[in-house]
Image 1: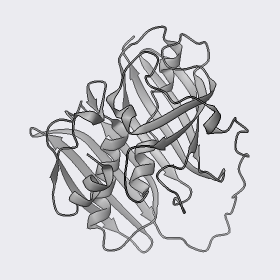
Image 2: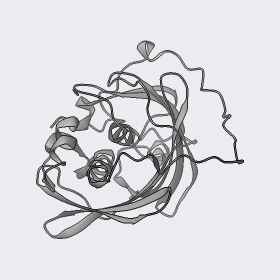
Image 3: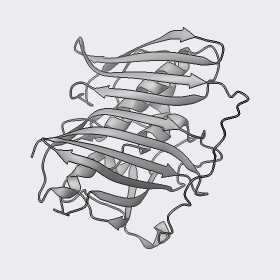
Image 4: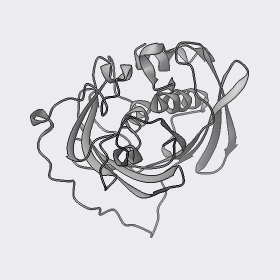
Length: 263
């Protein structure tokens, strides 16, 4: 299913089936899981709100070929901050929970807007598109164009779990929205996968996103820079941080994940 079709359907429906093409391993692609929940929450807000951060707990695998149900509610509306929650269920079980914080802009004396410059990578047009992830074939790559620029790839047995790459949508129609950015932010395999020699199962346990800027004038086929490193990996878990920059090199999103590794 086209994601814009899915987001539109959620305006009037609580249940949706996105289809087996969005499988990532044994579950619905995590970025799409979060994007669906965010879109559902946005639909019940009294007006468009500026997202500041969201946190997702991935509780169990979601069957992308079957219907999921989304229950969204606003927890509190303050003078400038709105908090909301979404539960995603399937067969009566809660499989993912999202908490989101929206905040209106205010005058502030705390101002620090400078960030490191964007990495000077080769243009994405000079880099090959991934057809698999370290030998792991994934149906959702039909929709995502991933191009490695630096660092090792998944399941390569590297010593350092970090890499830089470009990402964008392909075979998708319509306008690029914030929910699309959330989906893109989880398009790459968990960074600890780089440390493992050979394909092994792993999944996101918790995921936190911080939005510095709303996407502006972004088309569906515009590339984003994705730069990620692993802070620590041991005892079957990994802790990672990623940054995404838009086509103009503007730092837009910061992502942190706790990953479970079964190898």
